[in-house]
Image (tube, rainbow over all chains, first blue to last red; front, side, top):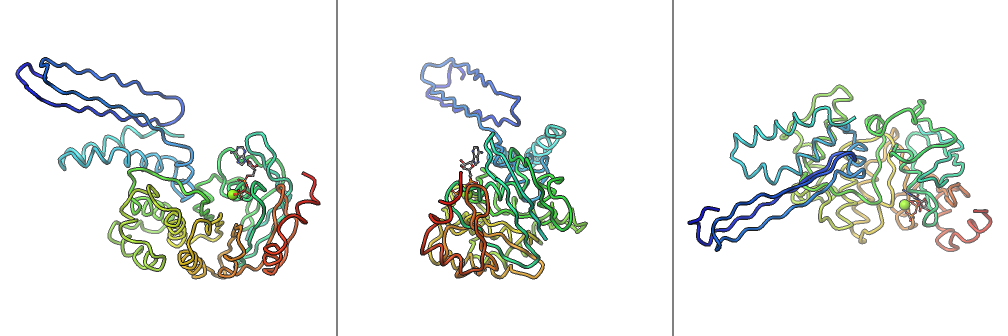
Length: 104
Length: 250
Ligand SMILES: Nc1ncnc2c1ncn2[C@@H]1O[C@H](COP(=O)(O)OP(=O)(O)OP(=O)(O)O)[C@@H](O)[C@H]1O
Ligand SMILES: [Mg+2]
């Protein structure tokens, strides 16, 4: 927040999704505020792909990879759909790539 | 179709199934009744191949092959379907997306062309109205915020779309109001087929008025303690499980 930004507001949200049981998430918000009237909020959540969700998808015939991709895309969708079309497509691909080889 | 022999299974270091024998032929509908905690859902999960449900003794053959050799998704692709007692919520994933991914996994396995979004909508339309499933329910994330009855109808829609050969319905009737019970039962009855078998788990004989089973089995302490025709359900409704389970050493 710049010094001249009177009564400005900021909201940062950081949601993490854990895949598998060998990972964790540490979210460290870093916000610089140079104006005393600014209002700044930060929120973080951590959720996890549950065994139940995996089992449910796999019982319907999906492979573990397909199941994770589906669940992660669902998780990211809220944010991705806010992006302009060309970014959204790009981001969707990135999610796909980073998931390759993460299961099994 | 399905041949279970002397099946013993363990969950979390507890022996839950203690020697189940059950043989189901193509086209048959078998009902399983039994007190809470007798092992009905455990049997359903063992058939589906859920992780953590360890078979310690006995065998299950499905269409002549050893079912226990197959992973959960392989069983699904070979036509095993489980309508869950507690359907799982998947935030952010629209119902249609979930359904299409599932249907396409099966089509891919069968060497058929996958449905695109338009084709899939057409495929769903018909079955959707039979089961009284609104477009809104398909747009919303899978099971998130669904009422108990909506979740159960959604399970049967999945069954209708995936066209399994062997379906296990775990208490699909619980939580349904009278109209929904009829809708679901009609949906299940349309799916009855000489090449499709079903195992229907229920606490209420009323469901069996609608979905009339060929056989009824009573499960207690992880064993089948009595089998009979559809009239057995009526007997149970009158007399309870007391006499059947009491004689059984835990
Ligand atoms: N994951 C688990 N961990 C520990 N115990 C379990 C687990 N799953 C099942 N059990 C135990 O196994 C027994 C059988 O449970 P199951 O869910 O198969 O019963 P059920 O016949 O389906 O009962 P209900 O009619 O209440 O649905 C119960 O005593 C239950 O506590
Ligand atoms: Mg149960």
